[in-house]
Image 1 (cartoon, each protein chain N blue to C red):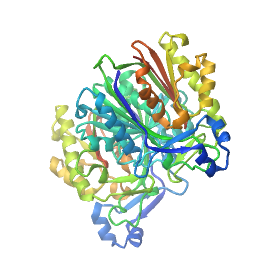
Image 2: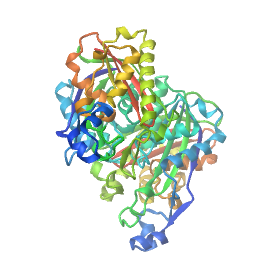
Image 3: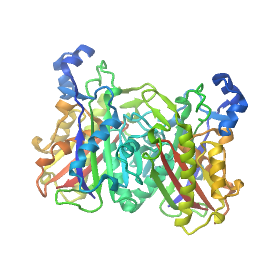
Image 4: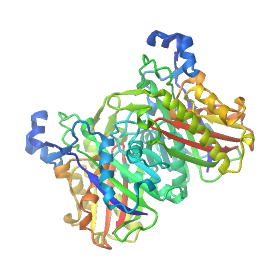
Amino acid sequence: MFIHSIAHYLPQGRLTNAELSELNGLSEDEIFKKAGIESRVKALPGEDSSTMGIAAVRNSLASLSYPIGEVDLVVGATYTPDDTIATLAHRVQKAFGIAGARALTLSSACSSAVNAVEVVEGYFATGKSRRALVVASEHNSAFNDEADRYAGHLWGDGAVALHLSRERLSEDDLEVLDISTLGLGDLGKGPEGVYLRVKEGVVRMPNGKDVFVNATQKMVEETAAILKRNGLDISQLDYMIPHQANTRIITKAVEKLGLPEEKALLAIRQMGNTGCASAPIVLSMELSRFRKGELLVMTVFGGGYSCGSMLIRR
Amino acid sequence: MFIHSIAHYLPQGRLTNAELSELNGLSEDEIFKKAGIESRVKALPGEDSSTMGIAAVRNSLASLSYPIGEVDLVVGATYTPDDTIATLAHRVQKAFGIAGARALTLSSACSSAVNAVEVVEGYFATGKSRRALVVASEHNSAFNDEADRYAGHLWGDGAVALHLSRERLSEDDLEVLDISTLGLGDLGKGPEGVYLRVKEGVVRMPNGKDVFVNATQKMVEETAAILKRNGLDISQLDYMIPHQANTRIITKAVEKLGLPEEKALLAIRQMGNTGCASAPIVLSMELSRFRKGELLVMTVFGGGYSCGSMLIRR
């Protein structure tokens, strides 16, 4: 399986620690220390997860070597949907007139984008798809309580589009060597750790400590496991793209893995936690950095809980 | 692929046309004529799509020949989620302690359950799953405006659990001979036909006529296509289970297909439109009716739009 084209979209709005300080009463320094975030990307009025997803797909067209009408599967990934019936995938299908494609939108919280790629892998295996489009988009600001001192400082908005193909289509394609996901609803506080209860309309993280401990541990375990399964050790890894939830979780996980910290790629400081879109957005941002043959692991952890990883070779 | 065990759960609440008449000002007769619904199943306070899904799984345990802990994939299907981070699949995983399983929850509106089975097919094809659990659950009453004269009469609540396996596990298993889904976001009014805009918190169907026309046509086309692909004609079909959205759509589709009307299995009259759970609930209700070797097609149509079909042999 290959990533043939990838592009992201970040809206123009920003929410700085200075602005947040006015809302939650914490100092800028206190806010920064919580998760290492200085500023969050924030959608403008009129934007939602579907419009941002569509914008990311539009940005992907320049590097797509075939007409988008050849896409035969659209998988949306989001836990912040604007609509659960007319889903992200269906709105992307409409926006680009992708007739005859399968379409569905899924969530496993911040693991959703990796889960979406794994679902594509399944459709490739049955031969029902050859050219798939994964659109991961999060509109956290629509559900965030910015005055919430526990987790209101975390959330950012953004989207990313990945075109996947069964066969290599160009020299520049990224090869997905391995992918794995795991549901962790049974772990720790599980569904009580982080939640977005739709009728309440607010994302909450009442058990931040449980999230921190399990996220750190699972990100280490998943990264080690995917390397081991592929006969690699940590010194052979050129880059790691961790889920961009909290700089402290990332620092801890990278330290435990024994990975030099410059190999962990981050955009959280200026972006916030853009949910399931976050790690693929960093892949898109840093694409020009990767040289032929270099190996990277993307490792994610989601509320609920859930986790996943991908081993990618340029 | 085989359906090894199936069971449903319908909550105890009911909303009759007499009660609805008080809310929307239409006569009972006018309400009945719209979609052929007399009464709708309605969740009780404290129930939601996750609790109903868990109840359906509990009902499935009696006919499951292996411990539920052997499930390695849980796919939730719903467009009426109680939580988009701690999803239906993750809450089922937690409730039954299904450690080590993959878990995700998806929506393609009323096609979600068929899409979920197709996603399972993909996981079976990659060898990442052998024993999967699909849980389809809808809590329409949480999002329904009962005073809405256009579509407030339609919606019911309910859930269903299907255990799927790669190999036949018992003589009674149902074989899924073929399955197919299609996104139709590009068709007609598409995302404007039916929607559940999460921030508004209400399900609406402002373009009922467009839904009616496209649902009827696609249900006919999909049923004919799956029969043709498998070398069958309509006379060889023992039963059809159509999406239970509207008796008028079903009657029209069955007539166009030339199927004797007694072969179309319905529960909508007393149940309402229970969304993506509806057709599998009817399969579960009518299970004892099917004799060895009999063929049935399940055909669904969803808002957004989307459609899908499954050819099943007992």
